Length: 147
Image 1: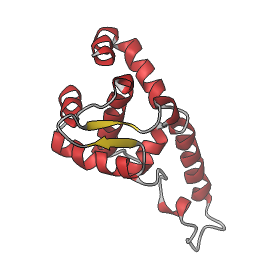
Image 2: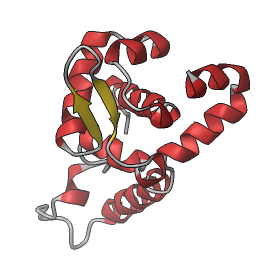
Image 3: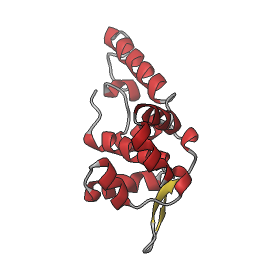
Image 4: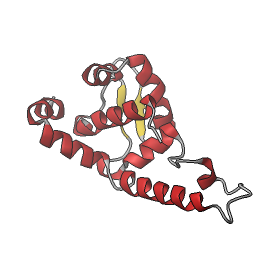
């Protein structure tokens, strides 16, 4: 299974919102510049995250975005499922409509893969990512988290 550009950029955008959570509203232009992602592309990514209630949107000249919940309460798994859909390696894990499922040996492998992936992404929060970013980039993090 591969995570698409939409999922990867969405995680980066959410990390940026987590790093700046205490600052309040952040413009998409700022996120695009810092993360080196097209603002137009971020506009497409932010909509499903807003509709799903992970991000709050504010209009106007001073408008922008902020996380709807604290970074500790949002997991990587939530973000990826909103942007990517199911994280199953094959459809038959999600839809038990295969005539071979009763005796399919491969199905147990696919289920174990999904369980392992879910275990990872559902136990990493945006706060965990922000902490790791700060540890790996102390100088850059200082300016991002304080300005």
